[in-house]
Image 1: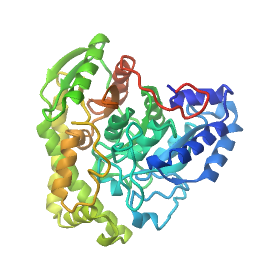
Image 2 (image 1 turned 90 degrees about the vertical axis):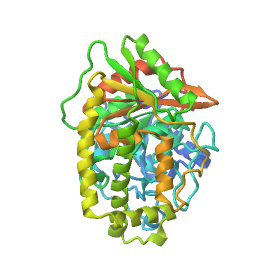
Image 3 (image 1 turned 30 degrees about the vertical axis):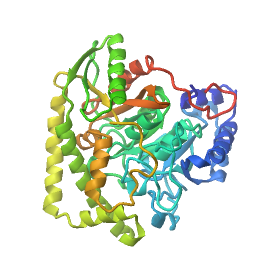
Length: 452
């Protein structure tokens, strides 16, 4: 599999140049345009970045030297890329940031070369990916289906062979759901593990995290190592204890993937046992996230001077809900967040990690969860049913790693490992045990001449 690590190694070994890799990605942007993965492309930036990489001395090259990189149209910003959060109203303004966010700056130092933006639903309000005013994003495994959201463009770009790694964000499952839909690996880091400054625009009261979507555990591990903030790490015992939790709402294929991944961990020497799925606190977390997202959206639109008639109906309804939320209700939600964070630690009294499905079913048809409706109750209920317990990791600040494991009906299946705060690298070690025992997926190579 050509992941970002292999691509960088090929550049460093002189098999290809950074310019070769970038030209391949630019060509793929055009040939794969029907995926709707890329919403902004700067070819001059791309080629200038690749040329600079090709003349950089070997002792200044990072682990992802010369690897093309796409930034999500929401979250941390990259210099010169006009992120619009999937909104036609913001896109029309075309504002280009004059600096990288801390996270994107750190990722750039690894040798990644940003050159475009990937699609997201308006304001990240769905677990599918239909940006406002432009074509919907499609799943490379089946273009009739969604690649997930809100980092759907990033997932489609990586799974479709446009790039080997891409920036992604997660406030209620938005890294893990697209990973599961597209057969990728993605970590929602612990709260505070990755930087949010200089402006903390994607803070969302601590429920949002950012990192990457990639093709391998090693790529995610390298990316996390490049950006992680000082914190007390959690180490695994010699024989890790893994609890398997299967929500009742999951279809048989999704549950089987988790059971098969559990067998892989048993084979690797882990202690594996079954527990009841944390559906109750998962639903509670979903409601807390909804309150925060609604209030955040209301503040965001006001700050930008965007009226409700300039956004999709569901976004307008969510913003109205946010404006109508009293400060006392918001305060209660934040206090509830703190209590749920404390309670969630009890989930790990007899386990070092919890293994569960990411999704309850296969990815839905494109448009199924778009923002054309006007009922936040219906929309949020459908999101929670599609990705049960996804918001738990966000609200409780837990790390959560999504991984592919197997196929059903021509589509990859995804599982996730959730751990206590600070267990990010420990989860990645467990993820490697799963990855090495998982059925292999075949992706298009992002550069001709290298293995897929």
